[in-house]
Length: 494
Ligand SMILES: NC(=O)c1ccc[n+]([C@@H]2O[C@H](COP(=O)([O-])OP(=O)(O)OC[C@H]3O[C@@H](n4cnc5c(N)ncnc54)[C@H](O)[C@@H]3O)[C@@H](O)[C@H]2O)c1
Image (spheres, rainbow, N blue to C red):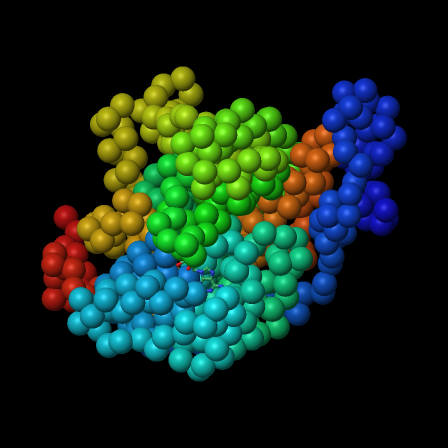
């Protein structure tokens, strides 16, 4: 054990001796196998920072030429959204399926835009796109295993990159993203659209304006019954035409970890200025047994022999949770359940010394015991609505994409690139939010023992500036083809 890890365990009062003598913990603790050892070892990887990408303003791009890699359900929506943003050219399209690229070309054609160059050449076809010189930004919406390989190739090829969530699957991938972004000075953005949802932005601005007093605790989640999507059988032999190509999302359920932490965690981290004034110190994780997935597979196999191939899979439990403590002594609880029959929730709860807010199951804000009534909520929205919502909120609702948050995210990223502004969600956020997956895997397998969350900023969190909410220096990017936009491409805001 390295001295830094030893002193970390000592500082938080948990050492190997204590764990070994606890009958409850020793009964659930697994021997640390090679994979778990690897997680712990790479959590301790500490490269020197070569350049601080937080707050970095890359040279302005008047036009942002985008290449898309992975154009399934999510990627095709992103192509469509980008057609509305001025200063964007969609120059390249890559997928392992020609049908996916054809679908994107059709979107461009419908919007009166020129055809993009196609890259359809197996799993590694993205390499050619990344080195083609055709793109300033590579937008990645593949299954999780390809996010980082594509992102690294993009940065090495001289492009910024934006990765769908979760950005990375392993600790090493997290560090690889950070090191490559710093060395190439290319942005590596995590596309955490939930940070741009209306209530999340409102509460972030309230925190920033001091309405919460000191923020003490936050809760977030990804609770989404994916039964339909998990078991949507592909229509063709190549397993390409299901809800998820090759049923990749069902395959990911074999991992006993929070495999999708960022929807709940991202907005809480922004409210707590994680990596920009505070940092996550350590987590402990716990997972229930699986009470549904194995049974569903057995049921489906009775109906259709296609599903027999999944019998015997060791599935993740239904619910897993992570408790995280920050350097400033705040706490975060993250939940993840994609296989229980229950309503959707990301919780989004923030608790401070003078205000409380929660989005699911019922949106409310409270000051002490009193929950704000409709009139008070209106007043709060008037007072604390951040500039981005005032500027593009209505347009975003019109474009759609999870009620508008997807468009606000895309618009903001393009506006930052065009105005040479730093990214709201940089490579350190991508790494810190995504690393919850391997770290929760380690903690779950080790009787919920705490594990340190690496400081990907290597100390820069103490001086990094919080996410900018005023659109200062930007806000100039207009939209096109939206029926209700005025001649300047802006919606009239009443
Ligand atoms: N932010 C959100 O709200 C949100 C919502 C849904 C999905 N997602 C994320 O978007 C990503 C894609 O999910 P999806 O639902 O669109 O899945 P999907 O299966 O519909 O699409 C994935 C696409 O990637 C292609 N692909 C696979 N391997 C490839 C490779 N090596 N190179 C190029 N293309 C490849 C597939 O052919 C497919 O077209 C995932 O990371 C997922 O987590 C995010």
